[in-house]
Amino acid sequence: MEELLGDVMKRLESFSRTDIAKKVKLLNDYEKIKKELFIRLVNVQRNKSDLEDAVCRVLGDIAMVLYVKMGEMEHYMTSMKIKRHMIKHWNRDEDKIFEEALLNTYLISPPRIYCWEKMIFDPRYDGENFMNILADYPIRKDAIGNCLSTVKRTNGAVAVFLPGVAERLANLFQGNFYVVFTSIHEVMIHNAATADPEDLRRVLEDTVRDTTPEEDFLTLNIYFYDRDTGLFSLYQAQEAEER
Image 1 (tube, helix red, strand yellow):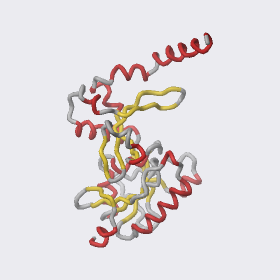
Image 2 (cartoon, rainbow, N blue to C red):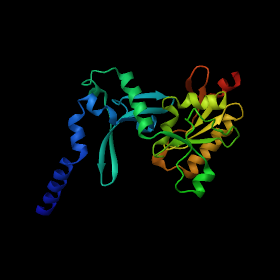
Image 3 (tube, rainbow, N blue to C red):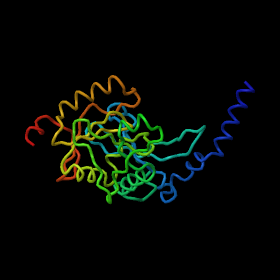
Image 4 (tube, helix red, strand yellow):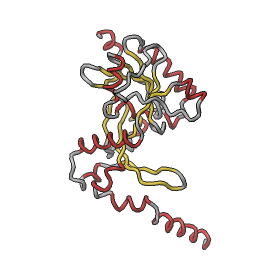
């Protein structure tokens, strides 16, 4: 028992010296914590209880959730969800907080498009910077589509919602596109003019069943981006027929 208590005390003492303990003390000060805020995607139904008091935006069955980076322990990044009662101390507009967190997410890990063949043969491959408006990126408009993630490739599916990304993709396609979330880490982007959303749904179901770990699952739904309105929506078969 003495050894166990001694070990617990050592761990608590170690924790008190970490960045995490320091961040906890700063959570009430928005100006000191705002650069550590970021957005992560989760499935609504599978995280229903965790989202009850969370600061988030819901689209279909996907929730864009506000997190704060707390630091690192034993070489792993630690983070926590921001609860609504926490932001009351910040005296800031919630929509503004969310917008700034999306921008932070972009700066922490910028969006990239990944070519499968390069990923297979080059372990140092870090993706294509399609956001460079000075270059005309050759986006794929065929059935294969484009794999979108971020530089870190962890929780990279959020990339499609980051500032300017959807607009840039629509401009490269010169039209609308479908969004297929194969996991929380990446998303496939397909040209709406050439892709069949029902085919995409079937492929998504197969991909999730065969290759996506349970903890990385996000959705089995297909999403649609409308270039004219600048809005995302959940794909519905009857809506597609009307288009």
